[in-house]
Image (cartoon, rainbow, N blue to C red; front, side):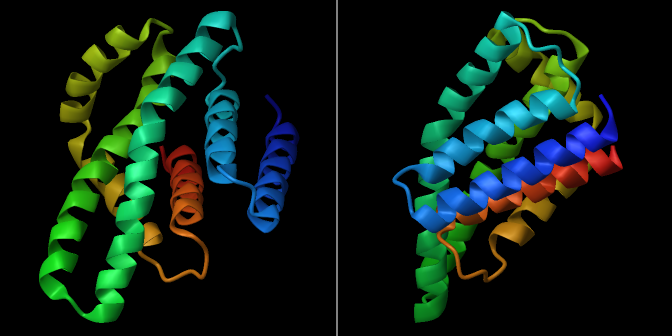
Length: 177
């Protein structure tokens, strides 16, 4: 795919995210997350077949509860930091780090494995462990990058902060590796 087409798709994605955030649409961040899954399929040059679309839908459905839990946890982290409640802040941060690792594995690594071979979801999750063990430092760097962007004090909602962090992390992932 040509780079101009990728640039056009990226600009359209960013405009749609801005419109969804500005309109304050209920669950607009989930729509943006679904769009990001479709965009990652295009950027990883995975052919758009029925099976790849079903896999993207299944990954989105599996990621949705984790996304909701992470956004509420990120809001709690911001509250605990403002109140200077260090014990609860440490507990929430440790939980957020673990969930971020799972979230990055579900979003970025699964699409990366789909690029190699399009199989069903169970086989993708079976291939995650050896892939993660082989490239553990790379994935931990990506998780650290994701967490740093999530915790950056940007005056947007916690769910949009996670969408922004995932978008920037995927762009970093595609540019670097």
